[in-house]
Length: 193
Length: 237
Figure (cartoon, helix red, strand yellow):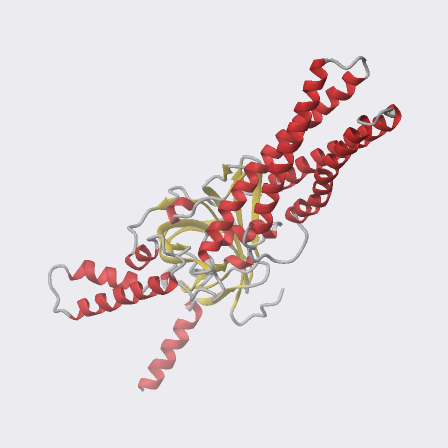
């Protein structure tokens, strides 16, 4: 009798169980930094992360995070290897090779015609420093097993005790713009693009 | 491209410094051992503290302990060949390199301008006192340029290297232009000596002097242009 109750429970739970979504190739994080002489665009195509989410219950983010969003500093490319090396020094990548965002809570979840928007509240780790952080994002379901998560925020690097690099005695703006665009697939679907 | 994304409104919310990281921020990032030992000692102390029976202040202690054990705040071991002080020295040396390079551009620019004025004045004879003064100024500026340039170049060469990936970029151009302005800065005084040598003979050959002056002028402008170019490629890319 108990077995049948368990099986029935599992069958009832199956339609609403959240699928596991994993960041795959095509994902990108962009960092835009301003200097009086130039605008620097750094891009990384190697963000990592996984979360559980069910399209049938789009506003339910409880228990969402399976693996926090992480990106290795070494994967960023600004088109200038020397500058990339300097930036890695500044963000203390030799001690803390990755930046992490660990969401702890979600708010302002809303459905839109194109998807779902919400704000993730969590801890952002850069260069061995942690700051509480809020990051709004949008999820667009592109196929049954594929979605696109977009987000963007401004970040003050001095809050992480990072001294902005300078060029010809002029320092870069400490405030940078970060944009992320994650292509995610369900863990069971093929991850190759 | 950047307008289509939802954006954070509040930006960064500063949290209190965390104990393990605070220890690492005491200007001793290079001394990884000291930093690691301090973090270990802190973790040990906080763990021992947590064994004490719970009191009214147990909340904050538990929070501090969890912060010290936060896996994302644990540094990876420093590479054995990593020298933090060398990186600081590199930044200091390259800042001086930047400043002296700007000074080189100014002195070389002034030298080229004065040299141009000397050439124009020599068209009108006889040689006047002011022209002789201009020649002295030209020579003095040349000596200053060479001194500042060599010091700047020595700083760039001696600066501890940084690990960088392969590929061509602005820095490659910056280094490539060194060949041009380096050769120019060596040739300009050599041509200057040749001009003085040609002038000091008993019967100076005006055509030869003019040819040497024209060559020195061309080399001077090339060196100045490539120096400015080396600064510009770094500045704009």
